[in-house]
Length: 178
Image 1 (cartoon, rainbow, N blue to C red):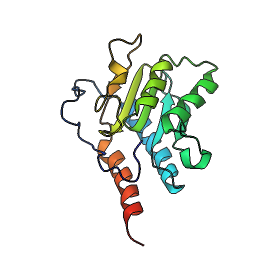
Image 2 (tube, rainbow, N blue to C red):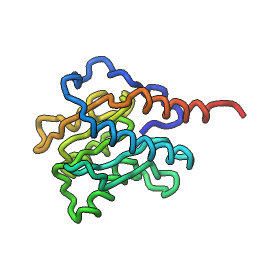
Image 3 (cartoon, helix red, strand yellow):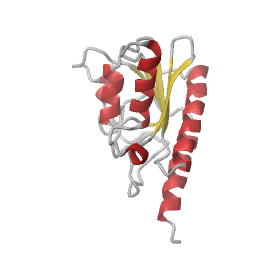
Image 4 (cartoon, one colour):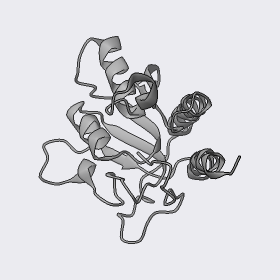
């Protein structure tokens, strides 16, 4: 997760990352990212870093939503992805979210990538790259580590410019004098 000093959020893949352009973006990926952007805006409006996430099942139904809640809950694990995965698990009555997609506005950090892996989601779709903390292809590639027993498909850069702009505007407002 970025903090107020982070400037490296990007809509472009950082140098040396895996080539995700061969993965086809599905219409439901865009729809899920739009819903995640709504959650991100709500987070930003409440003073949280504007990151949002949704979990959709194989039929495309939203079964979990989340947004950053670290400031409100005083919980360092209340990242948007973790909140959405917890809600999805509760909705289906199982921690295994096989057949599901996690969509998030910013490339997951190591904790969130690990949570997605542990939840057994089939796919992780994200918007902006996070070269400072990203663990889905930029700084680390936790989700596609060949040593793990489960590797979800990663779809990067969906609505990247919109996701990046939301974060940049949030941090610009925080840095502005007055």
